[in-house]
Image 1 (cartoon, rainbow, N blue to C red):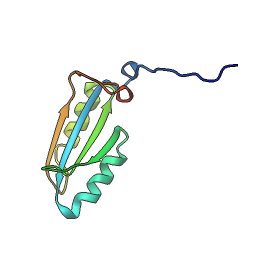
Image 2 (image 1 turned 30 degrees about the vertical axis):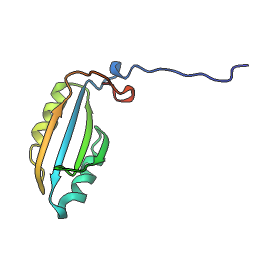
Image 3 (image 1 turned 45 degrees about the vertical axis):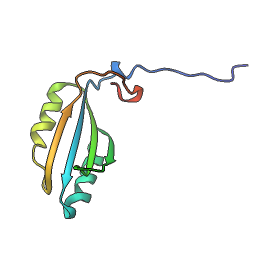
Image 4 (image 1 turned 45 degrees about the horizontal axis):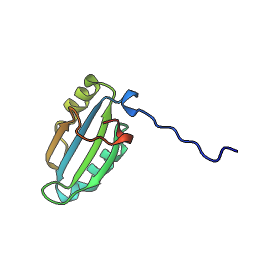
Length: 101
């Protein structure tokens, strides 16, 4: 009878409304520890290896600006990182369904 079924979820309606990209340039001996920290953070949804100036990029979803602000203040400096850049998504031209933006 019924052979298939699918559901399309509007992830934008779920709690995560602030999306942030964090890029890190890390010194060699600290790189693995920093990557572990990014992977273990409860709000990180992806952690990528990069080519170019930075070594790693993490994508975070936060329920609101207040929680993002706490994260940003706490993680302003990362031990062993040569640089940390945080960018917040303010809108999209073409979004990714699973990430809510």
